[in-house]
Length: 120
Image 1 (cartoon, rainbow, N blue to C red):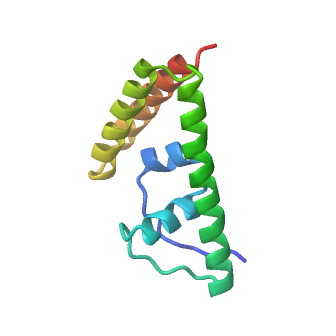
Image 2 (cartoon, rainbow, N blue to C red):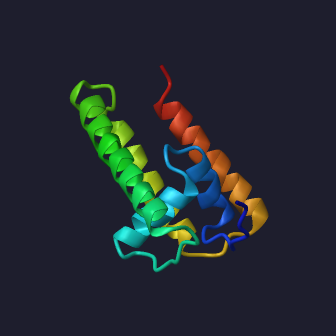
């Protein structure tokens, strides 16, 4: 079933979500569940709550992953600082309209920082 919905995220946020563990729909559901977004989903209640469960499970797994990676010294304090800095930039990006040329530049910078932090 194809649905045409207006995207709620700008180009930069969409690109970041594409590279994350979550789908755009799952991010929308998490925001909706945390009352950070009021959205209607054109799916059945059963499908919606199944996706709520899947989103919650992924979020729990993400937190356990960060805890174990930090606890074993794989994620270092500097890595966490970089992640927090990027998260703050994403918050700023999310709150404004971004011209396409700036969006691509921001995506490149974010990708560079993440790849640098993950260099093994």
